[in-house]
Image (tube, rainbow, N blue to C red; front, side):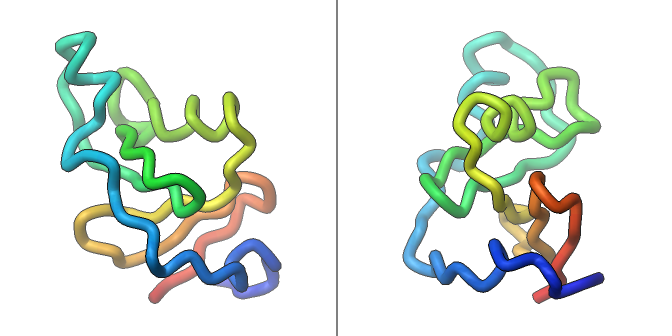
Length: 87
């Protein structure tokens, strides 16, 4: 896990998740494998192993660069630099 990405330096510790589930999956009645939370706005989306891939779609639509695994908060991912950062 690298720490070269400047996006990881942006402190957004006060961002809370908007929901405890992937809103898009719930609306579309899709199963969810794991959840990811956007560290810019708190959007919760499903991971790329899920059918909807809503966390990645959120990045593609908004450009918000960093998300974290949730609820376990083990790592962050930068979509722009394609880098992980462990807590």
